[in-house]
Amino acid sequence: MTRSFSVNWDYRCPFARNAHEHVVAGLKAGADWDVEFVPFSLSQVHVDEGATPVWEDPAKARDLLAMRAGLVVRDTQPYRCLAVPLALFSARRDQGRDLRDPEVVRSILAEAGADAGSVMAALDEGAALDGFRKEHEASADENGVWGVPTFVVGERAAFARLMTRPEGDATASVALIERVVDAVGGWSELNELKHTTLSR
Image (cartoon, rainbow, N blue to C red; front, side, top):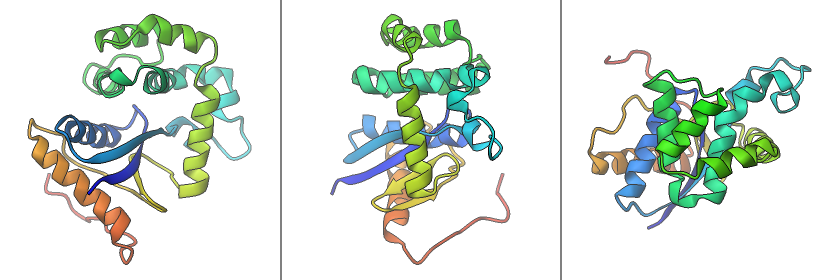
């Protein structure tokens, strides 16, 4: 049975990174999933009511750079749409590289096997800014998304904070993501479950 779902991401969030890595591990292992990766801006979430949206604020343009690059790759270089996000997450979370720096982003894209030149040229022309805004706003308006990662299954959406990363066991990643997707899409009685303590 094919499981269809979408998941929101922002490279700034470590939990979005965990979820993204599990989804990618499952896809690479051949999981029967139809997945849509949907961008969401944590910068926009923190804009005060009535203030200039990040999409219209030149001072915030660099904050959107990596996400826009990821969108250009998703939409124009699908053969790299799994590798590039993992590389950008790793650069941000493991290496502490500045994803607001165009030359850093260019380097990461190239390292991940993408056509970095065409992506950066598209960004210079304004690519993926309006699309980013529309996808973010649709997520917020239609599904009530306020953070990442949020999984959307049909008309139901839920934020899911996954505490682990894949450790080379794709079977475990598939089982984890399918548990989340099945709970979001098929357990309508549950509104919220949050552990009050953690084992680590």
